[in-house]
Structures are given as C-alpha cells and as structure tokens.
Amino acid sequence: NEGSVNASSGYWERGIPTGTLLNTASSGSNVYGTNLDGNYLDSMKAYLISECYDLSILANPALKFNMSFDLEENWDVIYVEYSIDSGQSWNVLGSATDLTWYNSDRTNASSGDLDDCQNCPGAQWTGTDTTMQPYSYNLATLNSETNIIFRFVFHSDQFKNQEGVIIDDLIVEGTTLS
Image 1 (spheres, rainbow, N blue to C red):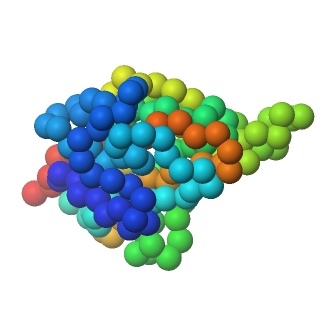
Image 2 (cartoon, rainbow, N blue to C red):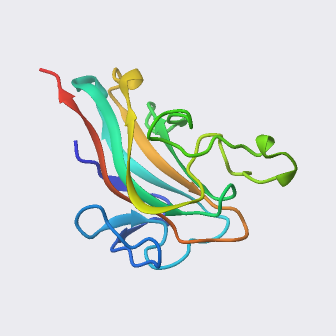
C-alpha cells in the first residue's frame, strides 16, 4: 500500500527540497520536510501522521521509507511511533538494536554529565546523514492489527538548529493474503 501522510501539526511541509545539505528526493521531486529550504525551528515538536493500515491482510508486512537528516546530535531527534487505538496512545516503533533502523539509543539519563538528549526516547535518529537512505521495519509482531497508524515525531530543543529531516516514498508493504 502506498503511504499517504497528514502533516497534522502544521509544521511539516510537502514540496521540493532545496536546502544546502537536504536537497534530493529519492523519487519524483516532492518530499515531506521539516523545512524544505532552510533550518527547522527551535523548541519544536511536530508530527507527520500516516493513513490507517490493516496489517491483518498482509503476509510479512514492513514499513519502508527513505530519509535524510541534519540534526543537532543528541539534542534534536526524529523517531517513529505507532497507535492501534486511533491515536489515543502511541508507542515507539522498534529500538536502536534493530537492523536498518535507529542510530541512537541514548537518553538524557545515559548522557551523564553532558545533560543532552533531553528529547530522546532512547530509540531515535540524531546527528547527520545527508544521503537519502532506505529504512525498513519488519511489522510481523503487529501483523494482526487491523487499525494501525504511524507517525514521525520530530523534536528539537530550544537552542541550535540545522536543516532537519526529509522523508520520501513511505509505504507499508507485504504480500496480500487471499
């Protein structure tokens, strides 16, 4: 199923990325981005929410997308959450130990005297990877869910900002069961 998303927080933009570092879509010309032509704002928490999916009709379901990012390392983060109750409650999808997923398991508690990662749930992307990379998460443990929603959570702290995040080609994929 091709993914569609809702930039419900009013902060995510859809269009052509023209940043200095984040300026390439993986297919076509449009992406979703925290700011398509400059830096993101400080003290921001913004959500990019998917449509609702029925995973029970798919064998081997997976959430896939392409992403590149330029974030203040350990201070500004992006991660994926899911809801199975129409958005009443949300859970972080996956962990930093999952292959092809998060690049950081840091939390504020694990940062010691540095007191960074105040926005980190302990499973997130942070730092910089400006090459559009494919990400994939196996949804086998959730394959009985008939009403699942995903959201990207972008969270910045109150000081330094960089170019942010661009996301392209979101899809929930699997083999349709007969």
